[in-house]
Length: 443
Image (tube, rainbow, N blue to C red; front, side):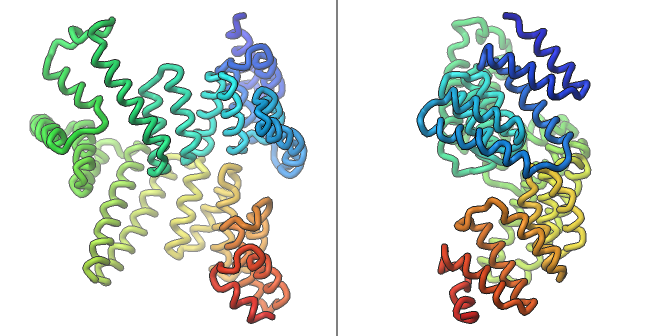
């Protein structure tokens, strides 16, 4: 069956904002072929657009989806993955931005061998939550399974950037890199023969670049070679970035930063460049801060700490300017401003971030903290209560919210309310902060 016409029809319906019809078409295709990756990916996009086009009704949508979600979880436990996937699609039709539910959908599709559909879902998760290491790692696995090793390695790198301790991602990246290297070495026996590379020096350079893990001596050789090239063309920004990468691998972030800063002068409007520059300079400042602490130089440490905070805000502001619609970036900037004590600007950014469903809960929590810091206890209480909805009592964030609500009640002289909030923490974690002392105080 030729599905391309149906997909084009669904895409056209989405362009006309006839989202219900587009969803119907994609769903029909998936009923016929559950592993139709393009249809699964298109459905994710349309459901997201339909969700974003409808204001309000979040509680109703949650309630409407509660039944299918419960059924899906039961089916997953029973190993009935096809049924689980169908129930999850029913739930996600009204709650398409639920990261955990999308992850479970991807796992169910993967379990029954629908790799193309699983890939589409995991890639959607990576878009929804760019710092979700599990989503990124699983996306990498499915992309590798469909033969795109370069893209898979990119996902594994992103997963490790989100969580450097992700052992599964480390192992997967290592294995895939080894496979790629073996394929490269044997390619002279198939179509991509070494004869295609006329320049032997170029072949050696390509071989070095393909190896992710190189010895210090090899890195020093790379550095010398790149420095010779840079002497001939000191305006090559791509060469500057390659030099920076080698310096980073040689654990010399200061030298790496110098080259990235120079490269950034040639590409001021690149988000990726700003992001790389921000991470690298923060690493350099943190290294200097640790050294000052170790040496007992408190004045230097305080100076570097302030410099770090100021730079992180400045860098994030530049990234927000390039991607003003990114709620996660607004949240990051709001948190940085809150940490610096700039609560008015923090509130402004967090109020924008709270409208993004992906980060509404976190944005609401930090918004409450900023309101509390400014003494607007009524507004802080409202945001804390919202961020508490649906959180289990043992959750660390829930305990922090309850403690802050207790502190607000205490400041307002509402002893019974304060004790009630502290009691809810005491019931699950007697060792949390000074909650045991609070219980004695309000006994």
